[in-house]
Length: 171
Ligand code: ADP
Image (cartoon, rainbow, N blue to C red; front, side, top):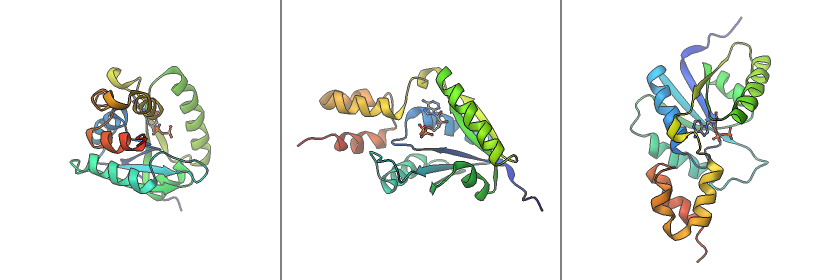
């Protein structure tokens, strides 16, 4: 028998290392479209993230605390399996550039092969956030050092600024 998946519950997965204003924008818009949004922080044992899974979970929960219909959790393994195990029918993704379109399209086709009952839904990045990525943020924090706190406020939620700068402190 086929399991009933909830089409009003969306799952937004990513590394969130760290969460940016671009991610937050997709989540905020997702909460208007869906009754519930689960943010899934992907744990990849083969990668060394800047922030540990525990740090990412704590920071992301802090940022999303004002939202009644958002839940944050970590997961291991395939995103599409996490979506199914959560009982949701929708994988929410953000789309920034032409490069994103290519990789996201391939990924969504693979996911559909794995789980035909799950739909990937894309939201186009807002113009003012479309250039933001977690790797860009790390570069600004690393190279900007002293003046970076003010500059970072245009890219990441406020609770991330201090913890991020601490990661790059040399003394
Ligand atoms: P991944 O490790 O899967 O690349 P990310 O945390 O970088 O995870 O991204 C998760 C999702 O958020 C992806 O769908 C990505 O395209 C989207 N995303 C990332 N940055 C932005 C942004 N600035 N605006 C809109 N969507 C974004």
